[in-house]
Length: 171
Image (cartoon, rainbow, N blue to C red; front, side, top):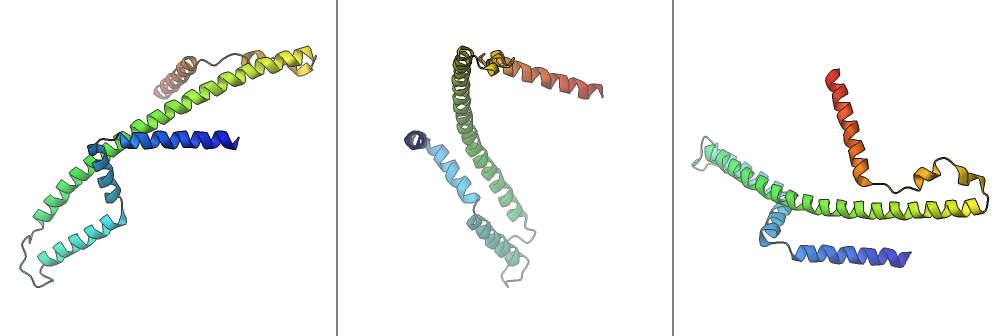
């Protein structure tokens, strides 16, 4: 079992490294900016910068104010916020695409597992019937022995969601 786990971990890490190498310079830049802006160093730099700017311009440092109404500071902070939010959105979009890939992989593995388990149920039921074991007559077994069709599951989920929404509208 450990060999299978190690093989899977190694394969996933290799895939992740390959995907990291395929990132564009724009993605790498956005990720670097997002990483830095999400750090305490960024907060401390801004705390010192803004405090210094404010103290200078209210006259507490004995220097001639260059932005007495702090309009330039507000404008600079607004422009910075626009750029930082854009960098964060770029990083989030890339991360969402990776999450979608992982979800697709997880779904495929789950469907494969479900199919294998269904085959095992059929096999065990046949063995139990040949051995005349009473549990082989359980009425749930034929249903368990059928493959799940994901599109039917999604259709059923959508039907229940629509039903709940209609009930909410009726109330």
